[in-house]
Image (cartoon, rainbow, N blue to C red; front, side, top):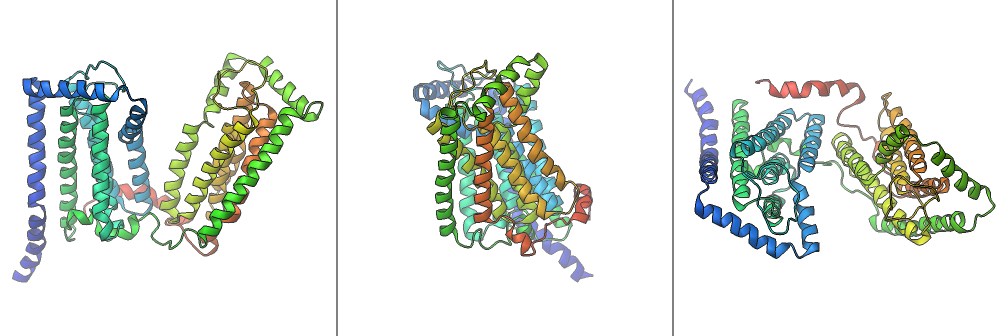
Length: 496
């Protein structure tokens, strides 16, 4: 009996040793936040003077420098709600696919807590934003605490704790330092852009540390109840899950001959650009009296004559499906899912190179050909690029064809044919919308097809994104096991 008691005491003692300092730190940050909140509420004069003085000083320093403002806005977006929700959502889905339900619950609870605390405290404190001489930042809502600073501290901190075991020990401290630097810079940008006071950001960091400490402490208690050792925080929350949380732990080399691949892609890129330039110059300036000229004249005119308010609205939204934001969102959702399911970087590299090549080829060929837009009223106003080829259509073709080429050989489920349908329907819909709105000629659509076919064909030959499938790689979730994902979250919440 005494031996059993000793066995039970040992993890408890170990847990106490590991977490006593951490618990004190959590309590300290909570007390610090409460004190700062009280000072903000009563408008303590020294704090008020520091907040407004720093806001005015930074505005005078930053506002005259446009490039610096651009950099600050790019950095501050890393703490925006859209980026944070995307990061946490993709991580949660990936963890569920890898059957790490407890870690997924940790991310969900931690993230939801930050989403609840931010607006609730803003409403409670009801503090106005800084009033600066030259407004350079956009904002909405009240000031205390900073939502960007709170969200970035909690989200990046939670993700770090979850994925830290995937890193080798020598890279863990640099990773912690990098995350700390990103969180610090995001908070600094909120002050420099004049949308938050210093105390707003400090309060957000204190609150974020307290909340993240509470959820991490609860997770460690959870481990103790399951009879597992309680690791140091530098090991992450679940060291045993190192293999499962690593993005692609089974892949030794992305490409067997990277130097040769780079050379082949560079040469291929130049040849594709040459083909685009030749076709673009012909249909733009030398196709008079041919079928191409008739097509480019009659089709835009016909669309312009058949416009209605309803069709205008429909074409606007379908055209949006091919813009940069939509294509980027699709890629940023698909690529992490590929990593979670098939544990390979090569398909991700294939998609990334597809989109990078499409963008660079489009910009280069559009600048070289410099084709005017169709001679009809366009519904989107002046555009920064010329007409040939259509960037919207090329991007839509590239992203959906690349996704289809990855998915089709990797599953035997019926829904794989949905991707084939999307690879046809989406580009055609975007093409009709762009021509309807007077933004492109039919031969611009042909140029987009030429760009996509040549570039994707070259990439498929060089990168061979499905080589792992033919070598026997199996997904983390087999076809017949897809239904098991529905139960992962529920299982994670049950005591064991």
